[in-house]
Image 1 (cartoon, protein in one colour):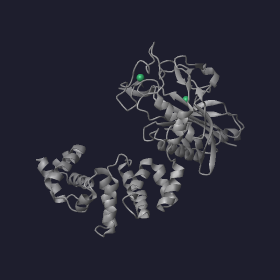
Image 2: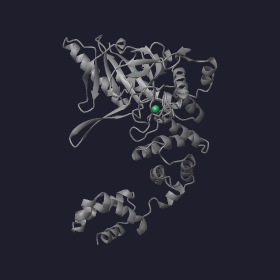
Image 3: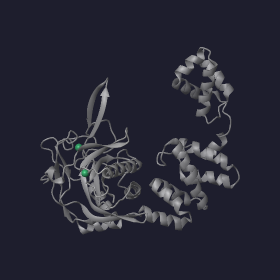
Image 4: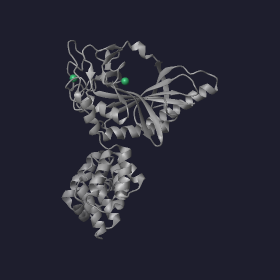
Length: 462
Ligand code: ZN
Ligand code: MN
């Protein structure tokens, strides 16, 4: 029987780090540092109250028991990403323990939830053929919530579904930003057929986690079939060969020589604090799907896509609902057409410039018979990216652009992006001309007047 357990590290979306005041926002390498997160002698850590509250929120949402009093420990090991030679984490007395999460008709037990600091980021690079290892301490001290599950999973698909649920819950609690790179990193423990436990460290991306698990189950089952035993070890995922490779023999927790951190006092949680956090807990994704289905009469599948794709997408839909009565039409346009355009531009709803009032205005134009659905779809594509109001876009989309001033800037852009082709065009190559005109048409959704484009190209070439 296959048994899979997870250790999930989630970056908490606080403004400052776990034990100092350094900001957590992206910055140039080694900008967000101070004596505390650099581990300089004499510096003293101080617990970030927000991070603690975020941890409590997550623990309650994961149905955990909270420890009323707990402490921080030092996990000692040497590694260049760890300036103090120990990581401040929680060991004997974690923040919370013994919870569970239900998803897709399954229940997974949560063993423990604790707070710890992120180590620095190691960047392997090469300059002029010489290999370098660089260290960025901006990440050093960013608060992590570590969630450890029991080995309750049997395959990669269950794990992916669990991680999607977990990510959406943390996003709805507003303590986690899933769009941030490396915001969720997973250590996977797998044992197939009663063999030893193999740990695969630091996998990011839900699909990647699923891939890693499928590979590792197959590898272990193959070895067992050949009558070989499986060593207890740590492996890592190599994206190039798409396989897991041995990293080191797995050490046991005792070898880290945990000691209580004498710089940090024990934390006592008051009943009032826990009560106020419990009362302020927002609606969680699964409940939201059911409510949206009942309240707006949309299908469960549509509600699910909006809620789990990105919390902001469900927020967007609900804001549109206040302005537009035909909810099933609205849901269809959000789930099918809006999402398609966002994916096309590779942006999220948060990054896009679409507003509920603008989007609803467009649907109203269809209802009044002013525009066709086909034209509306083209408008959405330009709207999400440019933020130009649909009323304005409707007048533009589909119309030929012959305005020299507009086209000139596009032509110049194309020339700078394809200087080789432009040289060939100047040398009189017909094919290069077709190519450049094609690029201008591409950039203008096929609306540029080709004759004007040819004239402009000839002008610049002179
Ligand atoms: Zn700092
Ligand atoms: Mn950890």
